[in-house]
Structure formats: C-alpha cells, structure tokens
Length: 299
Image (cartoon, rainbow, N blue to C red; front, side, top):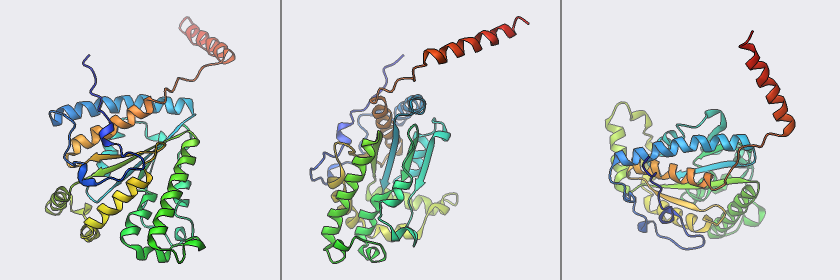
C-alpha cells in the first residue's frame, strides 16, 4: 500500500503572539500536490481515518472536538464541512451556524451563544462562523456595538480597548474549553479577492446556484481591506499554543478540503485515544452471552 500523503502543517499555523500579514499567505498554495486527483485521493484517505478517529472519540467519552470555520463569503466553508465530514457518523456531530444575534442574545455576553453549543465529551461540534464574528463583522461595522450589552467598564472605552478586551476574553474562554479536554481547531479559509469575484459571478450566472447569492455578500465585499485588517489583528491576538489558527489556502477547493481533513485527522490521532478497556466482570458477561448465541446454532 502506498504511503499516505501527510502535509507539513507548519506553513498554515499562525505563530502565537506574532504579527502577520495575510499577503504572506498565498491563497493559491497547494503544498506540492501534483493534481486535483492526488488531493482527492488524500482527502478520501483522511475521511476514512477521521471516521475511525470519531469512533474512538465516541467510545472513550473522554474528549470532545470543536471545529471553528471562519472565512469571507464564497470561500467554501459549507463545501469544506460537507466533504471533510462526509465519512463520520452524523449522530455524533453537531453543526451550528452563527448568524446575526437575536434581540435576546444581544442582551447577554457575546460568548454566551457558543457556550451553549459546546460539544459533549465523545462528540464533535462544528461552528460555521462563530463568536469571532464579534471581532470581525462588528469591528468592520462598529455601530453594531451600540445594540449589544457591554460591561460597564467598556461603555466609554475606545474601540481599540473593546477589541483587546474581547480578544482576551476569547483566549480565556478557549483555554477553559481546552482544559475540559476539548480539542479546539480553528480554520480561516483564505480566499483571494479575484477568486471571490469569480465565484460570485459563477453563482450569478448559474440558475442552479443563484439561490446561494445574497446581495449583502456583495456589499460586504466593498469592505475587503477592512476585513483583511480585522482578520490580521484577530489572528495575531487569538492564535495561541492551546488553540492556534490555521490559515488554509482557499482558491483551490480541492486542496483546501484535503488540507483541512489532514489537519483534523492528524490532531485527533495525536490524542492517542485507546479503545475502552472491558472490565473482568463485563468480559465474563460477554463470554456467557457469546456461548449462548453459539449454542443457538446447535439447536
């Protein structure tokens, strides 16, 4: 059997505490994959291994996995989640899409929503967009702040102080979650401006895809530079040793999916989850049942 293609993940990790520029991360990078066919083969292998890993997570009941996907519009979040998770048991996975908060949700701390959706031990949770919208969309459109509850100490604070406070709260939240034996994996799907433009046009020109296009997506595109800055600051401030960010090249969907699958599978395998050990008492019960079932064939 041919050796499995395992990516070097280092180029995708945002070094904790270091200032980065997204221009240094090539959205078209394919890490040496020779073809779309090769990437699809690697994806299939990882999907198969991920199914095995999920079974161990479920069987052990000790760990949980939280997958966070952030991206600009048309980067391919939905497709990546669909393809990467295609082999897992859907009964063990929960997917949450974080849309604009409701009036009730705006009366709570912005981390209340994700806290309610954290995965149980033995399960995988996927956040399609997440609480990071509160330092991305809200940063680009700070007027949203005025309809939200905020601590009294931040009512008259500068916007810069508000973002720093939120970064700190996010890091503390993820540290707490990690200490509860939850593996936190965060992916920023990095699509180029030109590729986004082409994908918008593909949706508009294809009757089968027009339903996917929202006029608001085009309006947000006008803030491209502001979003790039917001993402750079967010990635720098919230990529930690406990929960680092992975910047995934998104211009080639086939590579993006293979890359995400490879990272998820490798990180779960690093947990070295064993199958549960059956106690002597339980083994005696199983042996007795086995003998009874075998005896049925002799009747």
